[in-house]
Image (cartoon, rainbow, N blue to C red; front, side):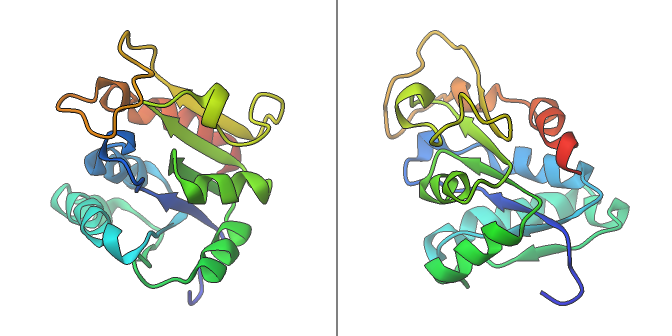
Length: 171
């Protein structure tokens, strides 16, 4: 990854579309960070990652940033993903498999939850480990456990400032 020594790892995907924080919110978050960011996911997640990068570019966010954005989406094996997680200062992730890897590696983690219940499927030990943060909006229809949703308020109502507030400790 070149000269990048410290970075926040961004994991913007999840198997269910209803578990995904919108790409424009990830873009807004990344635009506010002064630390380098690495975005990754499987090859099936390339479109999501490209939407994030495009949104940052369209907002002019890449000109304001003093740090690097590296898109490794679709370019890492599971072993490489684990190494990226291990090397990160912190991880921002939707409720996903890589989120659980970050928790298992005891990395500072901000996990975004919507249609699922973190008390049942959250990162292992999050209720006791102060470095494992779960952000969840208390909308009346959540947890619904639906794989798709026309209006996923449980995810769209998580705002960038909420995530940034939890992440500041690691910047």
